[in-house]
Length: 251
Image 1 (cartoon, helix red, strand yellow):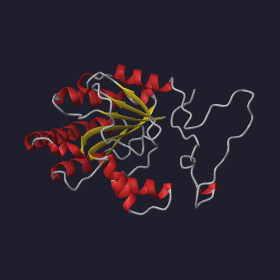
Image 2 (cartoon, rainbow, N blue to C red):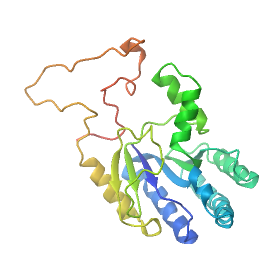
Image 3 (tube, one colour):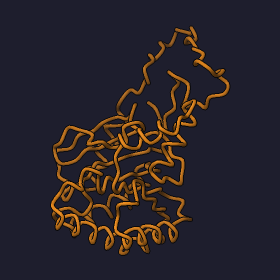
Image 4 (spheres, one colour):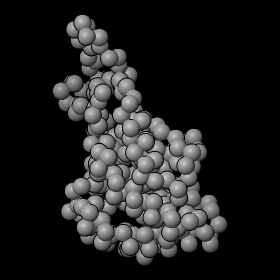
């Protein structure tokens, strides 16, 4: 299964009805495209710099989106999880987030993560300040920093809509080996066919994770480096430098 992330800033910006409709279509199509984890960038930590009136409108629209989509997600086996800070959000928004997470907790077809008041840099800083001693502890600290309840794999595919060519502080640690696809289609017009095109582009790429694909007659084993401070056996497959740990079928 693919772990995908869409920089669709924001789900409900400018054209809220269309934005929410597109989000619904993308969410419902994801399992059939082989996507098991989908993260949507709904509201960044930097979006607080927008005019106060616009921010208040966005908060109301986020509440409305969560309220309207929760029942549909329950029916479709979609589990909602919100990542990001919660201390700066309006209490009514936090209440709606918690309700959506609780009601959809048993969804097993797709994990839908909504990044709200999220900053990749702030998350990395908070995790580092917890003084982890290895990558596994750092990952746990990173999850705690953004209130993530469910451990997820690193991002396989990151899609940026609207013709932009930047990450915008989104899932920086988790996207270390993500395949990047930049779409000129703006979010309100982004459709299932565009997501399908991004997935097909992803599947066509050769993912080597810093290594090389051996030729058919090459039987030489790759060099295994012992990470400093811990034996190799103490690391999971995603933690060994140079090891392949993909969450989608390889070519």
